[in-house]
Structure formats: structure tokens, C-alpha cells
Image: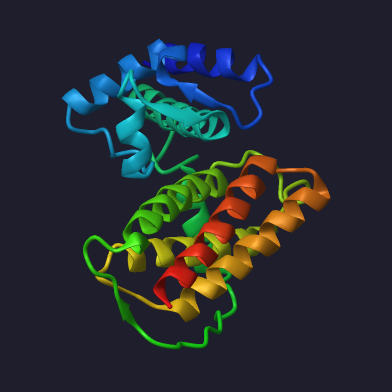
Amino acid sequence: MLKGIGRSLSRLQAVNLHDKLMPMTYVPEAVAVYEAFDARGILHAFGVNPSVTNKLKNHEAKLRAPVMIAALSWTHTYLRSLEKRSEGNAAPLEVGNPDLLIREIADTHPPEPIQIWTEQWIYVRRGSPAKEIIADVSEWLEEAVLLAKATNLDEDQAALTDIERAQLIAILETTLAVLKSPMVEPGLLKKTARVAQEVAQKAAKKKVEEALGIGLDRVAKRILELIASLM
């Protein structure tokens, strides 16, 4: 499995794909690994968001190249941890897991409280145009969370400090949770859009984590469309 993910990852990293939408057929070895994960009931065990993992096992699906690379890199780290653990050379499986590293940072240095002016809770009816926008925003938020967690850059080279990254992930995941509920809150959505725009601008200015910046810029614009559709 590790070799299969490694071959697919090397193929992706060898070409300049930018933000191109890539078919999973481009990385057949990886698809075979995710199919095996699914058959064993562990497809979601390594922490990648369900909407992404469901595409990883599907030959017909497509993912943006940076998201695909991030997912495969995350999986590669997970499989290496398993391999080292089985050899008895590594301690806990948690070592190297980006999700747990982010949580450690947040627990050790909790981000400052995020101030949000709550306006009102709005019920989103079935069949409402807002439902389609919510589906888009949710998918892009999940991709942004993955890209934010899976960076392999040192803090001084990245678009964000570790604390800023933990805070970004916290607000993105909170917004995702709210969007899964029957009601949404425009104040939270406005804050999320503002944070997403700020991080996108930082990434563009520093010319790093550009895929994350592009994704967050899309998130911000689509959230503003969502807010408008609710009013």
C-alpha cells in the first residue's frame, strides 16, 4: 500500500498541475489502496474528510490536484506510521499525524477567542437555492481544511503561523458543522468569509500555500453569495 501511494504521489509531484481538476484514474495505485481501505472498513480512519475520501476510492471522481496531493501525502504519512509501528521502531501511531499535531498546537497555545457578532439564526428550507450553495461551500471548506492541515512547510516559510493555522482550522470546521444543521447564522458566515479572504491575501503576498489561498478565496466569495441568498 505504501509503495502504491508513493508511486501515485511521485507521479503527481513530477508535473506542474497547479489547480487543475484531476481524474482519479491518473493515480490508479492510490485508488486501489483506498478501495482496500474501504473494503476493510477503515477508509475514514486516517482523518481525511469523508467527501474527499469518498472521491479517492472512485475511479470516476475528480479532485483538484493540490487536494489530491495533500490527501495522498496525508495517507503516505499514515501508512509510514503504521509500518514503523509494526516494526516496533516507532512509538505511538499518532506521531506524524498532521491532524493530531494541529490539535497539540491548539491545546498547548490556545488561539485567542474569536469575536463574532451574532445576528440571527435562519432556517434553510428544503429546495431553497441556498441549499445548493451550502453544498458547494461545504465541499470547498473540507478541501481547505485538508490543505491547511497537510502543509509540509516550516512555520517561518508558511503563509500562517502555527497558532494562526490552528485558529483558521477551528473556524472552518465550526462553520462546516453549522452548515450541516437546519439553521445558519450570517454573523458566523461573515466572519468565516473575512478570515478566508485575509488568509488568501497572505498566501498570495508570500507566494506560498497558493492552493490553500485559491481555495479560501473561492470559499469567501461563495459564502457571500450564500448570505445574499438568505436575505
